[in-house]
Length: 118
Image (spheres, rainbow, N blue to C red):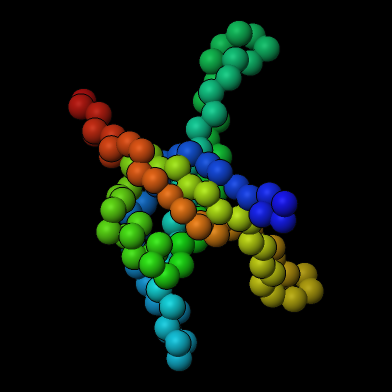
């Protein structure tokens, strides 16, 4: 039951091509940090269709980071599963809060969208 307390599943498009990086610490860990766009379509009170885009920051660690860097690129639709991770940077008035989705699994479900012709 504890596995259900902090679980996130999302489907969206990658906002940039994944770039594999290392932490640079003594025991270097590989990771990818990438934004994902999640689109929501709905009718407003006037009956008009509205598209709302919500951006989430994804973080991949270790082997899964290597896989996303190898298998995906900007604009591709993916499905992810993971958990929310919060962090605090700074102190006092400069204190800022961040929430990322730490990805534990992913599936590439769509191809990169074709560029629109003018």
